[in-house]
Length: 302
Image (cartoon, rainbow, N blue to C red; front, side, top):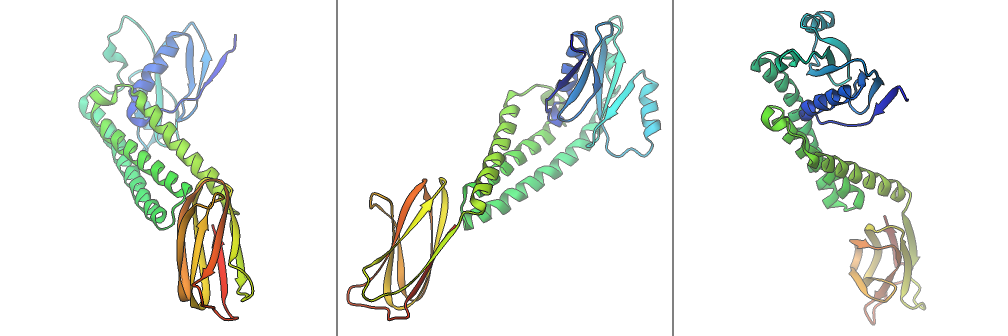
């Protein structure tokens, strides 16, 4: 039988009691914790032993030896700690002892102190995430893109989850209940970030530009552009002309998707959501007008 088991599970901080319950259940089945972690825990097989586990959060320890000795005096064996301040302890299980023997704290004030330490950190991270939501949201409004929208939504969901968790950890009656919705929340966050990253990488080098100098003998000029991904595309047109010009964007079926234009020193911009495909940008002057030989247009899409 395999003697080592690696378990990849992420528990939100406010679900630390559920993590302890899961470790206790594994111990009853013969799997004993060797090293706990935020994302991965390692267990070894020993069916002759049974333990009860405990978690403490403290990221400001002045004297680590004294800190561990305090728990050792109560029968708790220190296993390891994590980079973000969680400490894993265990104690041999004796079914004849009362349940209170396996509580790492003996008074409500101690529990509240531990909860306060994490909740302050949670509120700070939640505020940062909501700030990032506002910043990314403004950027997405100015220049829409799937990447920007996905990152904004991911920051929003993560910020709300962290702030909710910071509140729950201060209310043990709520925090101790496992919540399957948390798995959905974190799945949503990682999916949005993955989607944003994918589109960001694929769009990073994708941009095209074209320049056209007016030819009086030529018919209306059409520039063919492509959209490789379903996304928001910004078409920017610059024109040096005194005549009134009309710029039309159409799909392959001739359906008009956008129109812009004007005369003089034209600077026009249009953002469209396009599906993958080919599109035409057509330039045409008002009937009976000409821009002159210096008429120049430049188009760029990104």
